[in-house]
Image (cartoon, rainbow, N blue to C red; front, side):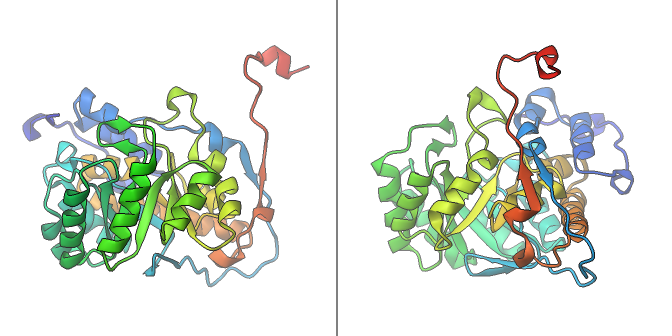
Length: 335
Protein backbone atom coordinates (compact mmCIF):
# COMPACT_ATOMS: atom_id res chain seq x y z
CA UNK A 1 0.00 0.00 0.00
CA UNK A 2 1.78 3.11 -1.21
CA UNK A 3 1.16 6.57 0.14
CA UNK A 4 0.83 9.60 -2.06
CA UNK A 5 4.17 11.29 -2.76
CA UNK A 6 4.86 14.05 -0.26
CA UNK A 7 4.88 16.61 -3.07
CA UNK A 8 1.28 15.69 -3.90
CA UNK A 9 -0.02 15.89 -0.32
CA UNK A 10 -2.77 18.47 -0.04
CA UNK A 11 -2.90 21.02 2.72
CA UNK A 12 -4.54 19.94 5.96
CA UNK A 13 -6.27 21.99 8.61
CA UNK A 14 -3.93 22.89 11.51
CA UNK A 15 -4.66 20.28 14.16
CA UNK A 16 -5.04 23.01 16.78
CA UNK A 17 -8.24 24.03 14.98
CA UNK A 18 -9.87 20.59 15.16
CA UNK A 19 -12.53 20.27 17.85
CA UNK A 20 -12.99 16.49 18.10
CA UNK A 21 -11.26 13.27 17.13
CA UNK A 22 -13.68 12.48 14.29
CA UNK A 23 -12.39 15.52 12.41
CA UNK A 24 -8.95 13.88 12.21
CA UNK A 25 -10.47 11.23 9.93
CA UNK A 26 -11.32 13.88 7.35
CA UNK A 27 -7.78 15.24 7.48
CA UNK A 28 -6.31 11.75 7.08
CA UNK A 29 -8.47 11.16 4.02
CA UNK A 30 -6.95 14.26 2.44
CA UNK A 31 -3.43 12.83 2.51
CA UNK A 32 -3.90 9.09 2.04
CA UNK A 33 -4.51 7.13 -1.14
CA UNK A 34 -8.01 5.64 -1.23
CA UNK A 35 -6.90 2.05 -0.68
CA UNK A 36 -4.78 3.03 2.31
CA UNK A 37 -7.48 5.19 3.85
CA UNK A 38 -10.01 2.35 3.67
CA UNK A 39 -7.85 0.35 6.08
CA UNK A 40 -8.46 2.86 8.88
CA UNK A 41 -11.76 4.45 7.90
CA UNK A 42 -15.15 4.03 9.48
CA UNK A 43 -16.79 3.90 12.88
CA UNK A 44 -19.43 1.63 14.42
CA UNK A 45 -21.41 4.21 16.38
CA UNK A 46 -24.71 2.44 17.29
CA UNK A 47 -23.25 0.52 20.27
CA UNK A 48 -22.20 3.80 21.86
CA UNK A 49 -25.41 5.62 20.93
CA UNK A 50 -27.46 3.01 22.82
CA UNK A 51 -25.86 4.13 26.10
CA UNK A 52 -26.69 7.37 27.89
CA UNK A 53 -25.34 8.86 31.13
CA UNK A 54 -26.93 9.28 34.54
CA UNK A 55 -25.00 12.26 35.92
CA UNK A 56 -24.46 12.86 39.64
CA UNK A 57 -24.65 16.51 40.69
CA UNK A 58 -22.97 18.49 43.47
CA UNK A 59 -19.87 16.26 43.57
CA UNK A 60 -16.45 17.87 44.06
CA UNK A 61 -14.46 16.98 40.93
CA UNK A 62 -11.81 19.69 41.11
CA UNK A 63 -8.95 17.20 41.50
CA UNK A 64 -9.72 14.69 38.76
CA UNK A 65 -7.67 11.49 38.81
CA UNK A 66 -7.55 9.52 35.54
CA UNK A 67 -4.71 7.21 36.57
CA UNK A 68 -5.03 3.45 36.47
CA UNK A 69 -2.91 0.30 36.38
CA UNK A 70 -2.85 -2.28 33.59
CA UNK A 71 -0.74 -5.44 33.80
CA UNK A 72 1.30 -3.87 36.57
CA UNK A 73 1.98 -0.66 34.61
CA UNK A 74 0.84 2.69 35.95
CA UNK A 75 -0.94 4.78 33.30
CA UNK A 76 -1.85 8.46 33.47
CA UNK A 77 -5.18 7.69 31.76
CA UNK A 78 -7.05 4.49 30.76
CA UNK A 79 -6.19 4.91 27.06
CA UNK A 80 -3.69 2.69 25.23
CA UNK A 81 -2.65 2.81 21.57
CA UNK A 82 -3.88 -0.39 19.88
CA UNK A 83 -1.66 -2.48 17.59
CA UNK A 84 -1.95 -1.56 13.91
CA UNK A 85 0.29 -3.03 11.22
CA UNK A 86 2.63 -1.37 8.74
CA UNK A 87 2.30 2.22 9.96
CA UNK A 88 4.71 3.49 7.32
CA UNK A 89 1.73 3.08 4.99
CA UNK A 90 0.23 6.08 6.77
CA UNK A 91 3.30 8.21 7.45
CA UNK A 92 6.97 8.07 6.47
CA UNK A 93 8.09 7.80 10.11
CA UNK A 94 5.55 5.08 10.86
CA UNK A 95 5.64 3.50 14.31
CA UNK A 96 8.49 5.76 15.37
CA UNK A 97 6.24 8.80 15.10
CA UNK A 98 3.48 6.94 16.91
CA UNK A 99 5.81 6.11 19.78
CA UNK A 100 7.02 9.71 20.02
CA UNK A 101 3.51 11.14 19.93
CA UNK A 102 2.22 8.66 22.48
CA UNK A 103 5.18 9.33 24.74
CA UNK A 104 4.41 13.06 24.63
CA UNK A 105 0.84 12.24 25.67
CA UNK A 106 2.14 9.78 28.31
CA UNK A 107 0.16 6.91 26.78
CA UNK A 108 1.19 3.25 26.50
CA UNK A 109 1.50 1.65 23.05
CA UNK A 110 0.96 -1.91 21.79
CA UNK A 111 3.39 -2.58 18.92
CA UNK A 112 1.86 -4.69 16.16
CA UNK A 113 3.26 -8.08 15.23
CA UNK A 114 3.45 -6.58 11.74
CA UNK A 115 5.28 -3.42 12.67
CA UNK A 116 7.12 -1.79 9.79
CA UNK A 117 10.02 -1.02 12.15
CA UNK A 118 12.02 -3.28 14.49
CA UNK A 119 10.63 -3.27 17.99
CA UNK A 120 14.14 -2.85 19.39
CA UNK A 121 14.49 0.55 17.71
CA UNK A 122 11.04 1.59 18.91
CA UNK A 123 11.81 0.60 22.48
CA UNK A 124 14.74 3.04 22.48
CA UNK A 125 12.28 5.89 21.86
CA UNK A 126 9.64 4.78 24.34
CA UNK A 127 9.35 6.67 27.62
CA UNK A 128 5.98 5.13 28.49
CA UNK A 129 4.99 1.43 28.73
CA UNK A 130 5.48 -0.51 25.50
CA UNK A 131 3.56 -3.74 24.85
CA UNK A 132 4.46 -6.34 22.21
CA UNK A 133 1.80 -8.16 20.12
CA UNK A 134 1.96 -11.67 18.67
CA UNK A 135 -0.70 -13.80 16.92
CA UNK A 136 -1.44 -17.10 18.64
CA UNK A 137 -2.15 -18.81 15.31
CA UNK A 138 1.38 -18.24 14.00
CA UNK A 139 4.59 -20.20 14.52
CA UNK A 140 5.03 -20.71 18.26
CA UNK A 141 8.84 -20.70 18.26
CA UNK A 142 8.98 -17.47 16.27
CA UNK A 143 6.40 -15.85 18.55
CA UNK A 144 8.37 -16.78 21.65
CA UNK A 145 11.63 -15.56 20.11
CA UNK A 146 10.07 -12.24 19.11
CA UNK A 147 8.45 -11.75 22.49
CA UNK A 148 11.64 -12.54 24.39
CA UNK A 149 13.59 -10.10 22.22
CA UNK A 150 10.95 -7.44 22.83
CA UNK A 151 11.09 -7.97 26.57
CA UNK A 152 14.87 -7.79 26.46
CA UNK A 153 14.53 -4.46 24.61
CA UNK A 154 12.24 -3.08 27.30
CA UNK A 155 8.67 -4.15 26.53
CA UNK A 156 6.69 -4.62 29.72
CA UNK A 157 3.83 -6.83 28.48
CA UNK A 158 3.13 -9.39 25.74
CA UNK A 159 -0.29 -9.24 24.04
CA UNK A 160 -1.34 -12.53 22.44
CA UNK A 161 -4.10 -12.07 19.85
CA UNK A 162 -6.33 -15.14 19.49
CA UNK A 163 -8.92 -16.02 16.85
CA UNK A 164 -7.11 -14.13 14.11
CA UNK A 165 -3.99 -13.79 12.01
CA UNK A 166 -2.70 -10.68 10.31
CA UNK A 167 -4.72 -11.88 7.27
CA UNK A 168 -8.05 -11.79 9.08
CA UNK A 169 -10.29 -13.65 11.54
CA UNK A 170 -10.25 -17.40 12.10
CA UNK A 171 -11.94 -19.79 14.49
CA UNK A 172 -10.16 -19.90 17.86
CA UNK A 173 -9.29 -23.37 19.07
CA UNK A 174 -7.06 -25.34 21.36
CA UNK A 175 -3.96 -24.24 19.47
CA UNK A 176 -4.60 -20.65 20.49
CA UNK A 177 -4.82 -21.54 24.17
CA UNK A 178 -1.70 -23.68 23.92
CA UNK A 179 0.09 -20.68 22.43
CA UNK A 180 -1.05 -18.49 25.32
CA UNK A 181 0.15 -21.02 27.88
CA UNK A 182 3.48 -21.41 26.07
CA UNK A 183 3.98 -17.65 26.00
CA UNK A 184 3.18 -17.31 29.69
CA UNK A 185 5.87 -19.87 30.48
CA UNK A 186 8.41 -18.32 28.11
CA UNK A 187 8.41 -14.68 29.27
CA UNK A 188 8.87 -13.01 32.62
CA UNK A 189 6.37 -10.20 31.99
CA UNK A 190 2.55 -10.28 32.15
CA UNK A 191 0.65 -11.84 29.23
CA UNK A 192 -2.56 -10.26 27.96
CA UNK A 193 -5.01 -12.14 25.72
CA UNK A 194 -6.69 -10.07 22.99
CA UNK A 195 -9.70 -11.23 20.96
CA UNK A 196 -12.15 -12.26 23.68
CA UNK A 197 -15.84 -11.95 22.79
CA UNK A 198 -17.57 -14.39 25.17
CA UNK A 199 -17.64 -15.04 28.89
CA UNK A 200 -16.54 -18.64 28.34
CA UNK A 201 -13.44 -17.59 26.40
CA UNK A 202 -12.68 -15.03 29.07
CA UNK A 203 -12.75 -17.76 31.72
CA UNK A 204 -10.48 -19.97 29.61
CA UNK A 205 -8.02 -17.12 29.14
CA UNK A 206 -7.95 -16.54 32.88
CA UNK A 207 -7.19 -20.23 33.44
CA UNK A 208 -4.15 -19.98 31.18
CA UNK A 209 -2.72 -17.39 33.55
CA UNK A 210 -3.44 -14.27 31.49
CA UNK A 211 -2.94 -11.13 33.57
CA UNK A 212 -5.57 -9.28 31.55
CA UNK A 213 -7.88 -9.78 28.58
CA UNK A 214 -8.98 -7.48 25.79
CA UNK A 215 -12.57 -7.71 24.60
CA UNK A 216 -12.04 -7.32 20.88
CA UNK A 217 -13.50 -8.43 17.56
CA UNK A 218 -11.02 -8.58 14.70
CA UNK A 219 -12.23 -6.85 11.56
CA UNK A 220 -13.73 -3.68 10.15
CA UNK A 221 -16.27 -1.73 12.25
CA UNK A 222 -19.75 -3.26 12.12
CA UNK A 223 -18.68 -6.04 9.73
CA UNK A 224 -20.66 -9.25 9.18
CA UNK A 225 -23.31 -8.52 11.76
CA UNK A 226 -21.05 -9.52 14.65
CA UNK A 227 -21.75 -7.94 18.04
CA UNK A 228 -19.55 -5.03 18.93
CA UNK A 229 -17.07 -5.50 21.78
CA UNK A 230 -19.00 -2.92 23.80
CA UNK A 231 -22.13 -5.09 23.51
CA UNK A 232 -20.49 -8.05 25.27
CA UNK A 233 -18.24 -6.13 27.65
CA UNK A 234 -20.49 -6.27 30.71
CA UNK A 235 -20.98 -10.04 30.41
CA UNK A 236 -17.23 -10.60 30.20
CA UNK A 237 -16.55 -8.31 33.16
CA UNK A 238 -19.13 -10.18 35.23
CA UNK A 239 -17.56 -13.52 34.30
CA UNK A 240 -14.17 -12.35 35.53
CA UNK A 241 -15.56 -11.34 38.94
CA UNK A 242 -12.70 -8.91 39.43
CA UNK A 243 -10.00 -11.58 39.23
CA UNK A 244 -8.66 -10.60 35.80
CA UNK A 245 -8.31 -7.11 34.33
CA UNK A 246 -10.65 -6.45 31.39
CA UNK A 247 -9.75 -4.06 28.59
CA UNK A 248 -11.72 -3.36 25.42
CA UNK A 249 -11.26 -1.95 21.93
CA UNK A 250 -13.48 -1.26 18.94
CA UNK A 251 -14.83 2.05 17.70
CA UNK A 252 -13.73 4.43 20.45
CA UNK A 253 -13.83 7.97 19.07
CA UNK A 254 -14.81 10.24 21.98
CA UNK A 255 -14.04 10.63 25.64
CA UNK A 256 -17.69 9.85 26.30
CA UNK A 257 -17.21 6.49 24.54
CA UNK A 258 -14.39 5.68 26.93
CA UNK A 259 -16.46 6.71 29.93
CA UNK A 260 -19.20 4.29 28.86
CA UNK A 261 -16.74 1.40 28.67
CA UNK A 262 -15.33 2.25 32.08
CA UNK A 263 -18.84 2.33 33.52
CA UNK A 264 -19.45 -1.17 32.15
CA UNK A 265 -16.36 -2.39 33.96
CA UNK A 266 -13.40 -1.96 31.60
CA UNK A 267 -10.05 -1.14 33.17
CA UNK A 268 -8.89 0.69 30.04
CA UNK A 269 -9.57 0.98 26.31
CA UNK A 270 -7.38 0.50 23.24
CA UNK A 271 -7.67 3.11 20.50
CA UNK A 272 -6.37 2.38 17.00
CA UNK A 273 -7.84 4.04 13.93
CA UNK A 274 -8.07 7.58 15.37
CA UNK A 275 -4.39 7.45 16.29
CA UNK A 276 -3.61 6.51 12.69
CA UNK A 277 -5.70 9.46 11.47
CA UNK A 278 -3.54 11.77 13.56
CA UNK A 279 -0.37 10.02 12.38
CA UNK A 280 -1.30 10.23 8.70
CA UNK A 281 -2.18 13.91 8.73
CA UNK A 282 0.30 15.32 11.25
CA UNK A 283 2.87 12.70 12.28
CA UNK A 284 3.87 12.52 15.94
CA UNK A 285 2.09 15.81 16.70
CA UNK A 286 -1.16 14.33 15.42
CA UNK A 287 -0.79 11.22 17.54
CA UNK A 288 -0.22 13.36 20.61
CA UNK A 289 -3.16 15.61 19.74
CA UNK A 290 -5.60 12.70 19.33
CA UNK A 291 -4.59 11.05 22.59
CA UNK A 292 -4.62 14.28 24.58
CA UNK A 293 -8.00 15.20 23.14
CA UNK A 294 -9.42 11.87 24.29
CA UNK A 295 -7.84 12.29 27.72
CA UNK A 296 -9.28 15.79 28.07
CA UNK A 297 -12.74 14.74 26.90
CA UNK A 298 -12.77 11.81 29.32
CA UNK A 299 -11.87 14.11 32.19
CA UNK A 300 -14.63 16.52 31.20
CA UNK A 301 -17.25 13.77 31.07
CA UNK A 302 -16.07 12.37 34.40
CA UNK A 303 -16.55 15.79 35.94
CA UNK A 304 -20.02 16.19 34.45
CA UNK A 305 -21.00 12.75 35.79
CA UNK A 306 -19.72 13.48 39.28
CA UNK A 307 -16.88 10.93 39.20
CA UNK A 308 -13.58 12.45 40.38
CA UNK A 309 -11.66 9.19 39.87
CA UNK A 310 -11.94 6.00 37.84
CA UNK A 311 -12.78 4.12 41.04
CA UNK A 312 -15.89 6.27 41.39
CA UNK A 313 -17.29 5.16 38.01
CA UNK A 314 -19.90 2.40 38.07
CA UNK A 315 -22.80 1.05 36.05
CA UNK A 316 -25.06 3.34 38.01
CA UNK A 317 -23.70 6.16 35.84
CA UNK A 318 -25.05 4.76 32.56
CA UNK A 319 -28.28 3.44 31.11
CA UNK A 320 -28.14 0.88 28.30
CA UNK A 321 -31.06 1.20 25.90
CA UNK A 322 -32.32 -1.72 23.82
CA UNK A 323 -31.34 -1.58 20.15
CA UNK A 324 -34.04 -0.91 17.56
CA UNK A 325 -35.74 -4.08 16.32
CA UNK A 326 -34.46 -5.27 12.95
CA UNK A 327 -36.82 -4.62 10.08
CA UNK A 328 -38.85 -1.91 11.77
CA UNK A 329 -39.45 1.26 9.80
CA UNK A 330 -39.39 4.80 11.09
CA UNK A 331 -43.19 4.80 10.89
CA UNK A 332 -43.35 1.68 13.06
CA UNK A 333 -41.21 3.35 15.72
CA UNK A 334 -43.65 6.26 15.93
CA UNK A 335 -46.61 4.02 16.79
